[in-house]
Image: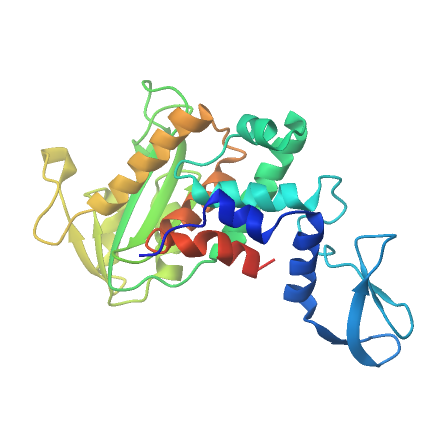
Length: 289
C-alpha cells in the first residue's frame, strides 16, 4: 500500500497559485485547445490581467475556475488546494478553527470552505451499487444521551439524529440521515442500492424482517440478547464505522448540527471508501475538479 503524499510533496507540486491554476487549466481543458470563438487550434497562454488563459489568435479567454468550488472566491487558489490536502490526509477530519489557523483566513471563510469541500467529497464519492455480503444498521448522533424513545419507532432518544448505513464488506459504504427508523425510511434506500439476492446482515429490528420477502438472503443477529455474531452474520464492520464517526465528532468537531450532518457523512464516506488506497485520496479529488 502506497502512502499519502507528504506536505513536502504537496508544496513541490503546488508551490504557488500559478502552479495550481496551470494544473486546473490542463486538467479541465488540456494543453492544445480548439478555440470556441475563432475555431483555430493551439495553446492558450496565461493572461496577467485575470486568472485566465487567452487564445493566441483572437484573445478569447478561458477561466479554469468557472464551475468549480473556487469560482468567485477571494481565497488564493493554493490555499484551496492545501485545504483539500488537509481533508484527505487526516483521519478524523479538519474543524473550521484548524482550517482558519492553518490558512490564515477568517472563521466564516474557513467554515464556508469546509462545507464546500465536504459537498465536493460526497459528489466525487458517488453512490455505487453495493453487492456481496452487505451490512445494514442505524445509529443515533448528537442530542441528549437519555430520554424518551424517539417517536413510534421505539429507538433512539429525543434530540438525536438517525443515520442509517449500508456497507459492503471489503467494499464501500453508503450513509443517509433518515427521519425515523420505520420501514418507510429504512427499506427504500436498501432496495435502491442493493441488488435482490444479495446477502444482508442486520440486527433484530422489526422493519428489516421484510427483507427476505423482497428477495434478499437476510441474516439476523440478536443484539438484545448480547449475540453479536452468528457465523458470517453480523454488523460489526458497520458498528466500527459508527464508532469512528462518533469519536471524530466528539474529539475533532465537538458537535455537529443536524443541518450539516449529511455533509460530514459524505466526507467520512469518502475517507472510508478510499481507506485502502490513501495515496489516491488527494489525487482523486484533484482529478475530478
